[in-house]
Amino acid sequence: MNFDLTPEQDQLRDAVRALGRRYGHDYFVTKARSGEHTTELWDEAGRLGYLGVNIPTEYGGGGGGITDLAIVCEELAAAGCPLLLLVVSPAIAATVITRHGTEEQRKRFLPGFADGSLKVVFAITEPEAGSNFHRLGTVARRDGDDWLLSGRKCFISGVDEASYVLVVARTEDATTGKLKPALFIVPTDAPGLTRSKLDMEIVSPENQFLLYLDDVRLPADALVGESLDAGLPALFAGLNPERITVAAMGAGTGRYAIERASEYTATRKVWGGRTIGSHQGVSHPLAHAAVQVELARLMIHKAATLYDAGRDLEAGVAGNMAKYAAGEAAALAVDTAVQVLGGAGMTTEYGVATLLGAVRAGRIAPVSREMILNFVAQHVLGQDKSY
Image (cartoon, rainbow, N blue to C red; front, side, top):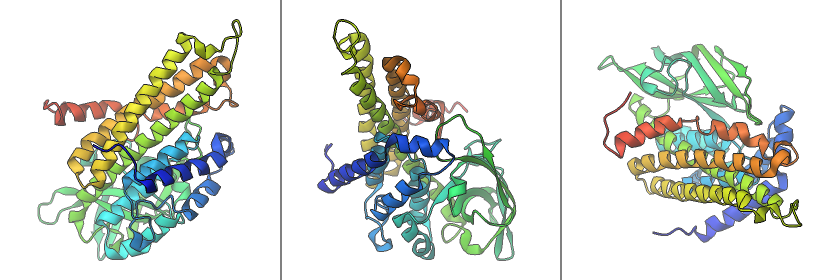
């Protein structure tokens, strides 16, 4: 078992870390609070090739895997810039199109993913069904050679920044009459597609939206893949990278919070000239949080390695565990950092309380901790399905 990154991956980590620190958390918060996006950071990361590390070289990418993209997600977050669109665009949408799109779709979309000039967001969650694709209400039906999509989606990230949204809908199987999932590449300016911004208590430059699809007409080639049979495998192809990169972003955020707090506690002196970090009541909680973050990072590395090796079933288990572990560790790290910083922890200046909403959301989305426990109980422990 090898825990070492390749020399190329080490170089990638160092380079992305340097880029993230040039922008930093102040940049991230300023953009979020002003209602702007982290466009400069995204564009520079794209020019440097960091957004396309997991895309095949023949389409302009780096030819790496989800391990490489997880490095990018983690290091930007560790610099105080956790970019959610890294998850929905390069990790989910680009992976789906790479693995299950037609050759025409790969040629059309992947070069834009690779250089960062194209953002494609992902829409599965619905007001009634949540993320349960078995009960999705968004339906696609044939109209001649075209498709018509109708339904609603919620908590869709970054629609205002994207050119397309990858919509999960259900279609009727002509043979069985049963509904089956299918994915469609929908332009965000398509007639019949409207959106409504959701106000969130999270400091983030990426916005959340409700989407309304009212007979959105799409050409036949908007369907991902050669046929409807591609729908289910295409959907699952995007879910494991989503969990892995969300976990990496959480681990990076945890590292950032612990680093900020440790710098403060190693220099802050209150009682008798001793640093507050010399007191176990301060240092032990930070050390505990650091252990939890490191354990999560190990699970992320395992999940990404399994995924890149094509071991999808094992990667599904490991990816869910990694997401659970990182969500808990990030929340613990940020909360602990706030606590040891005292009143300073709640100020914008020290840059940790600004992450409280994001790490709390990380225990809910894109899949809740309870649903992960259901998954582990059923698929690892052999228990009966509880829902």
